[in-house]
Image (tube, rainbow, N blue to C red):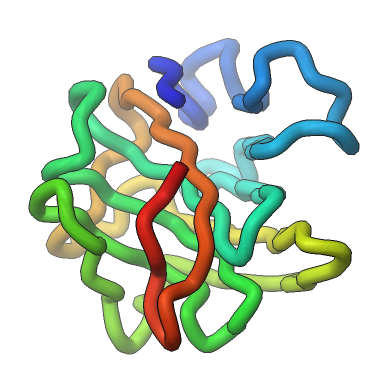
Length: 153
């Protein structure tokens, strides 16, 4: 599930929005929903919600998983955070979670995971895309495989 957007910069008119599937689903009935809102001049707040044990939103310069900067919200809060996919394999978690990423309001109820993640637009760190530039948003949900993120749907 992919959509191309510019999720943040104050210089554009697109400072907020959402990405969901199925398309046009009411918020409470979506399998996946991410909303985003610019926060000040240097960050964006993402609210993730998905039917599964984890939900993630990725930022890429194309529609493929390799070289994707990912924010994941998981039912096991120790797995929530920033990830980076180098290929079509389980992405690697950035550990510890950089100060450029702040996770709040995590929950897992009735098979739905949700959280709020604030991320700097461009922290200048390895494996973080510049959200001041046009990006493809990649959305995914999935199950956990033990204590790791499982394959997405």
